[in-house]
Amino acid sequence: MAESWAGFGSAIASFLFLYAMVKDHIPFQLSDYLAAFSRKVLSLINPYDQITINEYHGEYMHRDELYAAAQVYLSDSCSFRARKLKAEVGQESDKPLVTIDDYEEVTDTFGGVRIWWSACMRLPNSKTISFYANDEERKYYKLTFHKRNRKLVEGEYLNHILREGRDMKIRRRQRKLFTNSPSQNWYGNRSSSWSHVAFEHPATFETLAMDPEKKREIIDDLVTFREGKEYYKKIGKAWKRGYLLYGPPGTGKSSMIAAIANFLEYDVYDLELTTVKTNTELRKIFIETTGKSIIVIEDIDCSVDLTGKRKEKKKEKNDEEKEKKPPGMEEQDENSKLTLSGLLNFIDGLWSACGGERIVIFTTNHLEKLDPALIRRGRMDMHIEMSYCSFEAFKVLAKNYLGVEKHDLFDTIQTLLSEVNISPADVAEGLMLKKSRNKNVGACLENLIRVIEAAKEEAKRKAQEELAAKEKEKEESTVKNI
Ligand SMILES: Nc1ncnc2c1ncn2[C@@H]1O[C@H](COP(=O)(O)OP(=O)(O)OP(=O)(O)O)[C@@H](O)[C@H]1O
Ligand SMILES: [Mg+2]
Image (cartoon, rainbow, N blue to C red; front, side, top):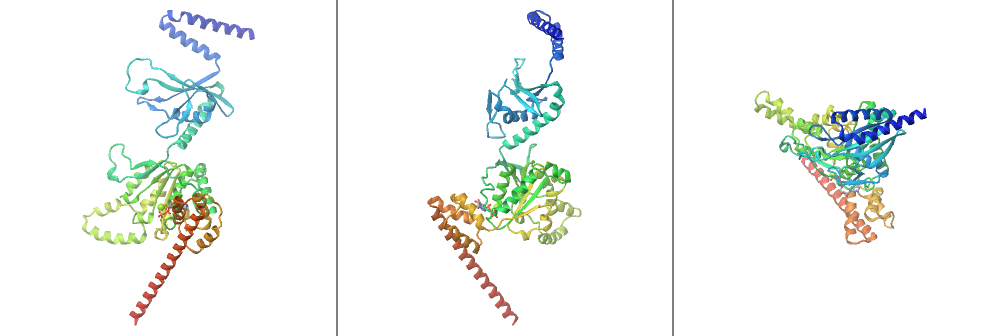
């Protein structure tokens, strides 16, 4: 048996040697035939298969998604095994991508199977000048693997590359802060209802001053949501979650949104409802958002007339207007407005399920002004109260702003904070102003004590004024009654 293999091997070697010698002297038809024949013979003895992934494909030279995913995948998972690397900065990220260089080879292991990757380049045959820059050279990856693993590589492995590569791309991307443009600016074929800038807010959960237990609860909820794709599918619910942040001004609602975006690494769509005129516009705006994003409506109570009370007022006004309109026009007008039901549809109608992995956040200073339908559980799954600065919250601010975890003046501050309502924004300001001029921690804390005492005096004065006003009102009504 060994002898026959040796004989076969030497026959092939002789054939290849002879072929190389006479190759240039044989007619091209015969040369093509011999090349095809030798490929056939080689495939009989070669146990390895190959898959090519081209960078560009199709008539219009679209960049192949699998190639792009593989490029990022190789940069992250396999590039440490390569000796020749290249670094480049793409359009979607400002971080350099270090990946394997052209003609370099690396190996990867998946489910115990070895796969060889090589970065190849096909040089152009023709010498004509092409319209497309990419016609000059065609890059591609070549995957080589054992025949017996073909099913695994074609199915699971390529899907794994696509999934992992996409995820890595999302993690690497420059995150964006979008804002909706008024509908009169939506023109042209490629019109978009959103414009964006880079999202660079530095707030994180570490810098957010609030009750530690509440913070833990929110983080756990976010993690459960992020990892809940299969769970949401199983229970038949769209993969999205609503948070309602409420509380007085300066208590960290906007900072919390930034911290959530930074924690989940999502984009932020800041929806300005006052520029949205109709339900149809709202739907278009929604469809143009992507997954892994947070859709924010700040100060929802001030954004648009959505409360039951205001609706009634509006209805009366509309009745008057309707009288003046020609028949048939009233209904059309009603449909073309942004309504509460349009907004409810936006949050949890059929459209809300497209894309998945979205968080909707409303903020308000006046919870009582909101229509209960808008914030019922299921729409706004978690109601988070952002409250005045507690001692626990102060300790976070002191650590952030002054870098201290304890100080002799902390006891005085604790007592003062329990006596007065002061927002974390005011406490932060008290710590910061002084810090910029004087680096002394004690002086900063003393300044804060003065700020809190002033707030306490102010609160006392206001309470007295209110009391006096009430008493005056009472007196006046008694006089009237007499
Ligand atoms: N809980 C907090 N933790 C850390 N910093 C805070 C907190 N609350 C407020 N701040 C500081 O105060 C500033 C204003 O806070 P922020 O804009 O988040 O308040 P807000 O609740 O959104 O107020 P508004 O209701 O007026 O929109 C922030 O830039 C931040 O520096
Ligand atoms: Mg805010």
